[in-house]
Length: 134
Image (cartoon, rainbow, N blue to C red; front, side, top):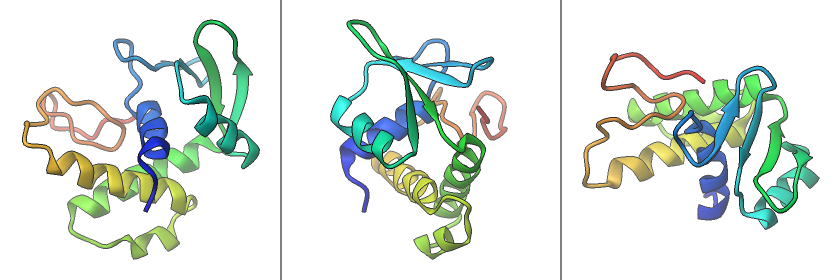
């Protein structure tokens, strides 16, 4: 099981759009926002993230091996939605990302409110019926 703070960090990256607290720059593939520095520092040490800029304002980070992370996160969401278990994580390029997506789907599904208007990588958009890809 992934801790809530860790899941929140990576989910905030997957939810990043123009009007969310975390911004994603398509050209540089960098994420900017106010993150839990302890969690960010841990994942920088582990090699999952790279610090681009930090200071008094927002922190800018880069998600290393981003394509593998996105693909595995979306696979986790899909398998959770299909009712599969987490054993499928072993077949992904990034088992951690799979688990984050898998657990996020289950957390979101527990909420009583509808997901109308919710946008996150790997989730179906209610306005288009298509899977949102970042």
